[in-house]
Length: 118
Image 1: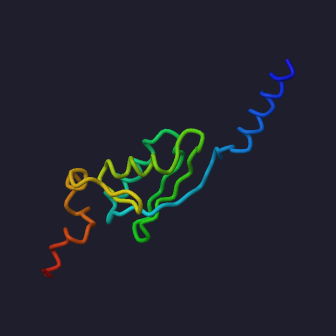
Image 2 (image 1 turned 60 degrees about the vertical axis):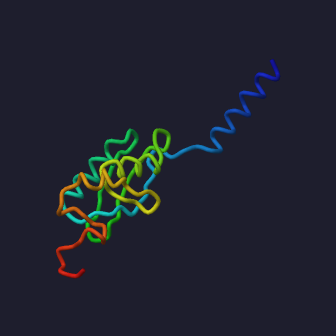
Image 3 (image 1 turned 90 degrees about the horizontal axis):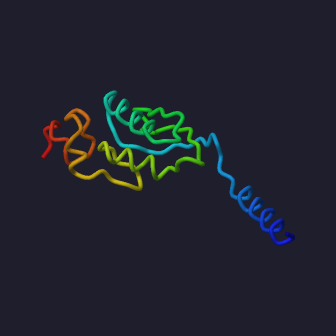
């Protein structure tokens, strides 16, 4: 019985020592250009279970999030973002996912041929 109590106490201390926040605020850089990108990025982020708030700022490319760390983590959000064609600092969208976004949303330098520079 004594071993059971000690085990329970140690398990409790271990889980509280590594407790995850219910409302963790964080920001990350996400590539995009316009209001359509904003809607797509925010929708993808909010589609991840545990994301409570997502707002992407067009000029700064910063995605502000509030997440429940008990249900998700930043890498899951980044994975959802690259799936809809938007690069993050750590992960890049596949060419297929990038090609699926609207032409005005193309943000990669090699795709900006409308400037007249070649």
